[in-house]
Image 1 (cartoon, rainbow, N blue to C red):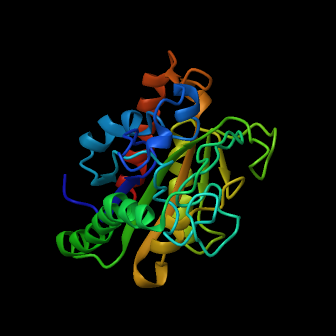
Image 2: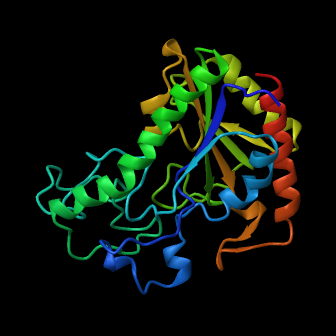
Length: 263
């Protein structure tokens, strides 16, 4: 198959805890995995390999460094001496979970923040930037298409925009129509709908820092965030795969095939 100007990122499926964040050790598994996009990489893996779609992902846990944030998204609950007193409790470093469970009791030093940025954030985003340039050269195309793949709880919590609401199977987000063209947005929605998913658009997620950073359609970078409902493939309490995960993986393959074929 000839290379298409298309790649995916999975920034939140990593589970590795760095030595720099000892406060994340000895947490219960349900709490530690509360906001991790567990198994997203597993569910997409076979279809990504079969379709030869380039992938950028991380092994690191998002509570240590959230790759869908900016290094400036910190406050004094996580980093001593940060400019913001509060407002980024679920920012670059998570100090609470979406269930308001405390993760960081004593804020880290600014030096630790810098070390974590250099260990986790910079390498991932360097790979993303390089992937754009590699695909431009390999495909001789100026426009590159990028899906940022995530998962979401089946119900919004009190820390979400939609507390208590039951969510669609898939939520497609484009930073309020800023990160890609309508054509690419409609293609991706059609891909997931054709595969059998119920799809919502820009609610309750409008996109993250990745879509903001890289979604510049006027410069040939088209990015969409894709959130998948966890209840489709896992027990949300135990964080274990359920009996439907293989069917969901097959449907995801159909969605990616449709998108790739119609670019």
